Image (cartoon, rainbow, N blue to C red; front, side, top):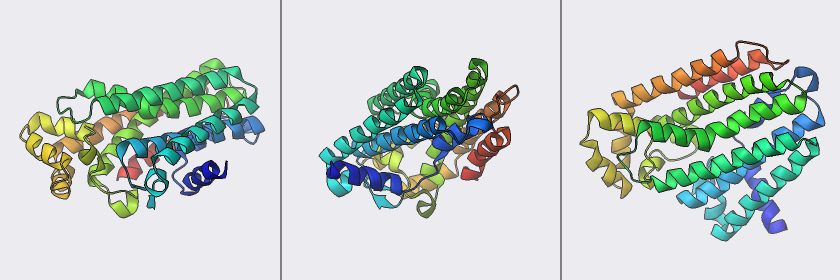
Length: 290
């Protein structure tokens, strides 16, 4: 057991933004925010997220995460697989403490979406004809589904109504879409000392993102540079070019539109959720890129 607990604990200790568990607490009715059920839901959501990071790093061949070696790089692929599985199992064990079958069902659905999103991404690797709609559907599965689930869980286990939970889940969905698009922008334009990973990781592993899709519309000759980057050649140069490209600016506008959708979702009864904090989270998505 120690060989699984140690890498799992180190993954959690590596830090991160903890946005997903924060959403659980912010979406719970404030009179219930310190309850054991809300804490269990927040813990479960973060454990699922950590599990996906361990597995994703293995699939992507990533060697660094948050400035530290990934589990796969430090301890090998077999340990990474087992540690990720262990985190998934611990997540659902924790969530059963809420006594809510609906909560377990919601997180199971999000976990399935995450898996399907990762499969979509792998299946579309190096596809320079990827459509924007296909990319956005991948974002919904791979990222927004867990954001939405976190918001729904906070509301549900805290005792909010179904309508209030649905409104908060819609906020999470839009916030998650914005988060992923901004994350893809940062892969090209972010400083490694801030993001904790090398620029152009998506270019190197063939993950086609929205800035690239939009840039290709106006500059088809980028295909040559993108294929070269996939071979590990002149990645920094391409990152610099794309960071200043109108396609990246257009991707930022798409992300901002999702931030506005998230803000609008908060217009209505929220069952005691911390509306001010949620609006601050929406604003922070923009600050993260700016």
